[in-house]
Each structure stands twice: as C-alpha cells, then as structure tokens.
Image (cartoon, rainbow, N blue to C red):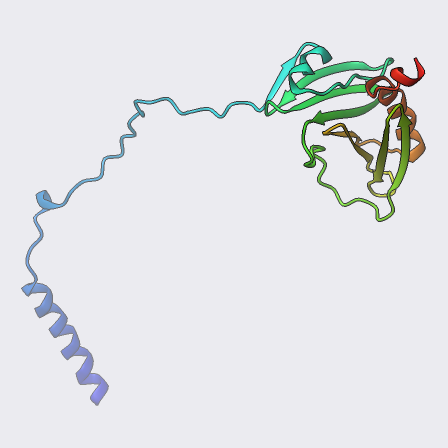
Length: 187
C-alpha cells in the first residue's frame, strides 16, 4: 500500500514544482552561430628542412666533403637543416644515403634495432686513422649502416637493401678513398 501512495504523491510534487519554476524567455537565450569565419592571417607553413642543391661543391659551406660512387645513378644532393650534407643515389638497383656534418651527434636518420655484433674496418693514411663501424639490421636482410668520424665531422652511409659487411664496404670504400685525404699519401 505504501508504494501505491508514494508514486502519486511524487508525481503531484513534480508537477507543482514545474509550475512554480519561472518561465524562460526564448529571446534571452543566446544563439550559437554556425558560421565559420576565415582567419584574417594565412596559416604559417613550416619551412622544409631539406634543401635540394646542385652538386657536392654546395657542401663546402658546411665544411665537409662527400661524393657519390663513380658509377651511381639517380643522384640527388641536399642539405638538411642547414647543417647536414646528404647524397642519395642508386647503384646496381640499390639505394644508398650518404651523410656528413660537423658534429659528434648521430646524423644517420636510421632508427632501427641493430644486430648485436657490429664489424669494423680501419683505414689509415698520412697522419690519420679512421675506424668505420658497420652495423646490420635483421642480419642484413633489412639493410646496414656504416658510421665514422674524421677531423671533427661525423659520417654515415646507409642502405635499406639486403646487404652484409663485405657488400656494403665494397660500395663504400671507393667513395671513402675519394673523400678522405688518401691522395696526400698515395697520390
């Protein structure tokens, strides 16, 4: 019986409260405009950090010397962020990226998990010794990266193609012999 009385009383109380509430004037309610106004200022575009250049001589301003392989095709030259010289080329159907900058930081742009046992190669010339460290990715199935330092500059040489230590260094060594001052001792 209690339930039969509570429900009607609650309903009557709600109706009384609703009748006592002040009426809302529709003219007083602000309206939301659905118009989208164009911004008076154009959106700012971020500058492209990669600037195409004509040839390796354009890298002189960066203080580094890098050149492509003599038999390379599809060669492109660029400067990244005003500090990194980059050459991308194709050789025997494989793509290579060669970079250099006056820094001690990683410039490779390769963010992979490398195989645990890198290999190295020492190159010596008149008054210098360079150690080239080669690290493969997925046992070479997903490429390899070579890195070295010389005279305050950092270098990297990368391919995403299937490779191993010997194949990568076969492409790299003719380039390094051109770019490092071997001509002073051997030339």
